[in-house]
Amino acid sequence: MKLEQTFGVALTLLFLTDIFLTVLYARAGAGLLAPRWNRLVWTLLRGVASLAGGRRSTVLALAGPLIVVSLIGFWSIGLTLGAALVIQPELGTAIRPSNGAAQTDLVTSLLVAGNSLSIVGGGDYSPHTTGMRLFFLVNSLIGASVLSLVLSYLVQVYSGLRERNALALTIDLMTDGTGHAALMLASLMPGGDPSDLKSALGNLVGSLAATKEAHHFYPLLFYFRFEEPRYAVSRFSFVLLDTVTLIEAALDQRRYGNLATCAAVAAIHRGARMLLETLDAHFPTADDRTDAVIETVLLETSYLKATQILENAGIAVRPDGHETYVDRRQEWEPLVRRVAPTLGYAMSEIDRYART
Image (cartoon, rainbow, N blue to C red; front, side):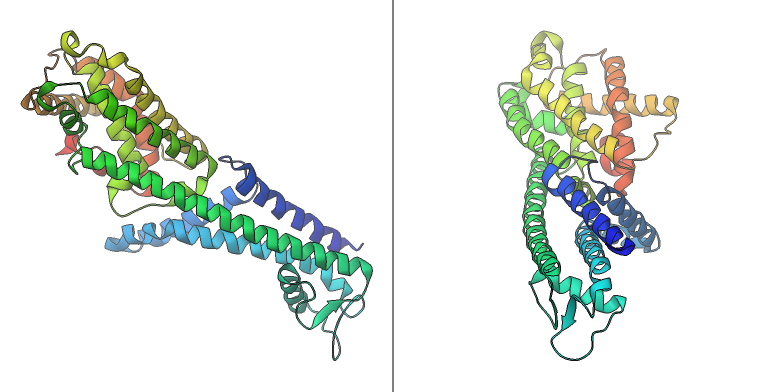
């Protein structure tokens, strides 16, 4: 086996390993090439979007589908190039056309390799030795298998995306489209009655867990950005975490003390944090450089506005809960601040009532 053929086999194995880790092993950050390729394409698209002015969000909304298409093309080119490096030295001898003289250039080897990945013996060139016949057979099996795996992978990605969007829309509807956690809490406790709150939050736990696992299994989901902030992971995670924080810090403990320790509240808090932590750990998120003094003032303002909304809804609140609220927010908000800018969302689109 010649040196270029050895390199071709190694290149093929590298891409097959990347496909295996990305599609079958399915863990965030597990791929060898795909995660780096996706980040490169995303970086390029962000650069293009920065030049688009008012159309920036529209350009970024195309990122997910474009990254999917580019990744499939990247894998296809890699496998084709690997096969071409094996085939080229055999052109004119073990691999010959049915008529005429054989061309031995790289373009011809790429054409033959592409044909061999799809149909055994396809095209004008065909193998004439046992070794090359077996190579063409293996190549065709690789091509068919990869095609099936990628199609199945895309179905799962878009299924996960649909579930994520359904969860995001459900949470947005609970806030009456405002993104205000206090309004969500008020809608779940009409007249201060907490009887429906636990079951409503419990219904969200399953969808939240499925969304978290979908992002862990299919990291491509992270790059699907929509123009409407209501669908942002950082937005609905913020609303959930802020809702839990208000339950812990703002509600009157004598009347609602058992709510802060119920299983649904704890699961929502942990699930939302795990989702944000998954994205923060495996993607190029932004640095949190917010001034601590300004942040404390903003958080206290958020608390006052939230308690006003709750009191107007007939919900008893604590007069001294602002310190607890600020402490809880400072524990999890840095995660939101790192994740949100990565997909081009401003904090004013995520934290709505602190800035209105």
